[in-house]
Image (spheres, rainbow, N blue to C red):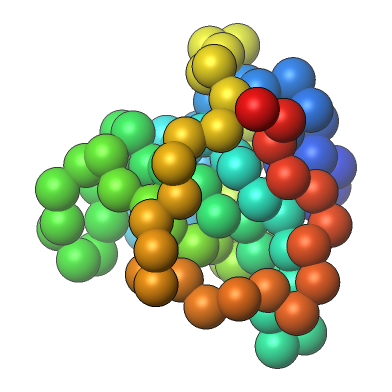
Length: 100
């Protein structure tokens, strides 16, 4: 279910909200992929909070299996943002990437 919603959000360039590690998150999903057998998405987190307490917005990876209360907010985003270099490891397989 989470994977289908993330795919839908990537296709429609829609912001998602969810709970992850006990924190509410709001993010733009940019890449859905597999790393070390785990399905994840790379998102540009624009709202909510995190256990690290780091400033937002920020690029973050999220394991789909650890996401709860996932929903598409209805808020759109314009498409790809410049990806940071060297901050995230490469994917074993990319499933879907947001269009420019």
